[in-house]
Image (tube, rainbow over all chains, first blue to last red; front, side, top):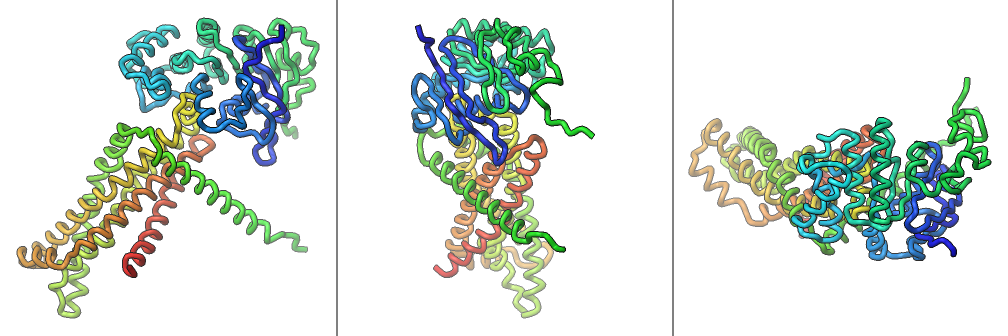
Length: 258
Length: 260
């Protein structure tokens, strides 16, 4: 049986001025599976997610979600699509003018038009799911530690039970233990709501834990794609260099040497 | 050998200028569209009215008071050269309502509000909070830009009306305490000479200034990039561009009102 493709990117090109970021990127994301995109800094990982969400518009290429080309759909269709998406941002991107529970309930109140009371109850439930008690619900995001902010961001991303969740560098900036806690929560939350997950990271411990499939991005293209179990013997020199963290290899860093 | 293409910087400047005009036009179109179309976030409009209008009262009131006072002094000095000191009360009222009330309030509110909006939205931009809004099915123009502009347009006329009263009162205090005018005569001269159109034209200006102040703050904040430095730049650009636009719009509106 052919895999059920939820999100498909085909030959996507995106550039900023003379700087080509996505250079014909193509990748398929299977429904209900977790794809982790690995790659160095500045290889176009975040830009890829932003193109799918419509925060950036590619110059050419096609992006299908549930078989519909989102680049050709109008604003209303796009907004309808986004109600089925959740995203955990790198810096958590919590609204600092709102309290923790209002952050988590934001998509429920603004997007789903739920009453505040009802949204409050769901928000507390989601906070409990990421291991946060009701005592933090009334705090401001600035009063929380980085790890707690990430967990609130995760609770906000899963609050509307989305079909697709994006994770942008979920473990960056956290200590190894907190990173592992976040990884466990991601796996738990994604499985619980049966969502399709796309994560971008350069943290391999995280990738091994949360991925079903791994894609490696380099210079705006997917250069390797396979099961997570295959990354150690991929036979791909780029992947080998990346997972072993070697400075020597086919991936050249643009560093000027005297 | 001079091998410098002096047309290159000219071309770069013109291209950048057109890019900026295009970006601003698109922003303006989106902002107006989302001000006009539902849903409306009235709670946010009210919140912004408190921040833009109510919290600006002290600074606008103080500047209006001193402006009215200094106007009375200057007009007295000028008027005394033509033996026309009695004109002080009416000219203070005209000057404040037609010109100085809206412009002084506009510039003061620019410093407070345009800067605050640019800094807030700029920080939201660089910390991806604006992107987060989009992923939570909320249009940032509706949620962030429209309430601020609506609040600015509604608040500025109210602020200026209050500035008018306080400014005229400042002139009255200086006129009666320092310059020795009779209190009843001063009030009579003020009330007799001032016309509805004087006040009204000032309030129309105020609404336009409120629009420019909030638009510039939101525009520059929305398009800020590059971390703390970018937010700083956005704040500066918002205040400078709003101030220039206010003075330019003031001249245009005044000449329109004169000729009509």
